[in-house]
Image (cartoon, rainbow, N blue to C red):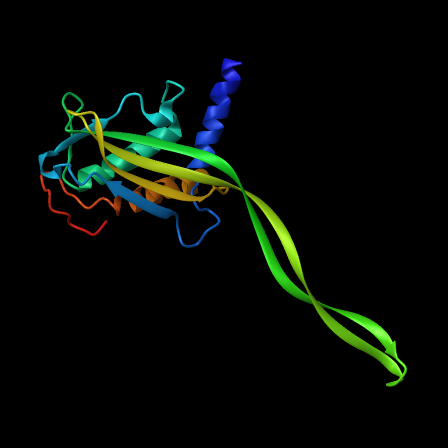
Amino acid sequence: MARFARNAGRLMMAACVLLLAACATGPRVTSDVDPSANFAQYRSFAFYSPLAIEAQGYATLTSGRIKNAARAQMEARGYVYDEASPDLWVNLNAYMQEKTDVVSMPEVDYDYYYSYRARRYVSVPYWRDRTEVYQYTEGTMNVDLVDAAQNRLVWTGVAVGRVGRATPEERAAKIDAAVADIFLRYPYRAGSGTPAVSP
C-alpha cells in the first residue's frame, strides 16, 4: 500500500508540473504580497523543510527540478543561499484538479416541407444550442516566500494551467518556464525594499 502511494505521488507530481501544455499563452499567474513586510532586510534564502511538494518525505526528480529553477530565480535577484540562517524560506507546491468545461454554441438546422402553393419543397431554418462537455486536468504551482524570523508568509506567486503530455526535455523546459513566469511577479531584489518591477 505504501509503495502504491509513493508511485501515485510520483505520477501526480510529474503530471502536475506540465502546466499549460495545451495552451499557447502560458499559465495564468497571480501574486500577493504582505504590504507590511520590509523586503530590504531580506538577503538570503533556503528551502522550507519539509517542502510541500515533498510531502511523501523524499525528493523526486521533478521536485529537484522545481527547486533548481526557484534557486536560480532567487540567485538572479541577488539572494544568497544560506541553509544555516536564511532570511527567507522558499516553499514550493504543485497539485492537480479534475475540471469540466461546458460549452454551448448556437447552430442552425433546417426542416423541409412541401408547399402546395409553391409546388416544391421549402426549407425553413431553426436555431438550437449544441452543448459539449470537456474533461481536463488543471495544474497549479505556487511559490511561497516566508519570513524565517517571524515564520510569516510575505509573498506568494501562483501559476495555473492545463496539464498535458510532454517528453522529459519538454517537461524540464516547462518547469523552468512556469517558475520563471511566477518570479516575473516578484518585484524585489536582495536588500532592496523598492519594487524593481510592477507586480
